[in-house]
Image (cartoon, rainbow, N blue to C red; front, side, top):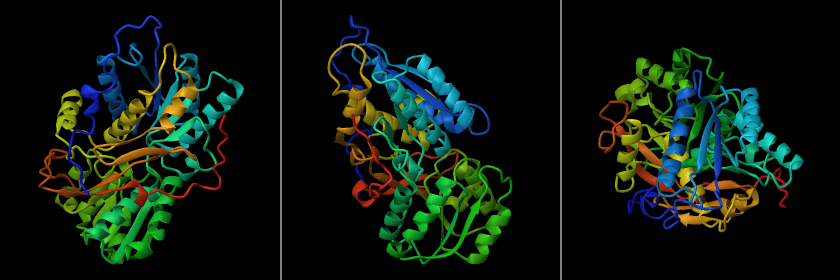
Length: 412
């Protein structure tokens, strides 16, 4: 089912914090830090997370901010390392930030959520809240779960589940599937999910590959191996250069199998794949094709292109968070416990469907939009005549995994 009733971020124009005065004598302020990779080969990914958060926060500030004061938003460059992230967290603490938000890399998310947990244990009453909007490792809502941490991003099982559900429902999932993934927690979880979904999806896995992360410059040997297996569909959780270069290799090799992933709308992928991308499937937390188009056009005006990939996941997540914080009443600085209570107790019916947070492990529950690369899409990508046409919205009840036994959240 597709929902097209209104703009996904339309609340920002007319609802969010309406009627709050511009000035407040209490000088309350909400301070948000983003610790992300903003330099090096993965900087483009970090820029998209920043843009998505900045887009929502900027609109709120232009409408009066939080409790009548502008929201502070500061970006800290982790340089793509756990050490860098840990150092930037200390800087964020010194800057008295309330929320720490992070995007790409489950390893960095693990570092930061542990840093926040340890800081909070040592500093009762001065806690920080951690939110990842781009890390999918199961352990983040498993053994590393804690009261002041949230995951606003689907796990590999949720991504793969949405793709299999939608493709099977549309008759696009045939019998032979190949799985290729990066050899770390994210890719391993994708491979496991692909295996577990084989029965419900009605397919047979004819080959699997786990490869080094962001070290391979030529994927042609891997594509040759895929061709030998003769799959109908290739399911992959690859992202960044590992997907861009994989798409280039499939084009060069003339691989005819359709791909299913959650990262195909990353800028550059359709350009690299060319016409071979037609018929590929992608899952996302949203789509500019759904709604009245205002979000897409405003975003393009601000950043020079239509929203995609991390732009969407970051903006959808921040929209929910800001809506939730409307329920925090009073004056003065907002308490960390107030932030947590507001977020975990909030739910609403978005343009894409119902959204909420599971209290037991703080996993964000959201519908996922599955799209197909098609020339009939309204918003084209990468300067091609192709875009991402929505074919199904998969509701969260069909995607969510059970609460893990390893999550033993201690509530205050």
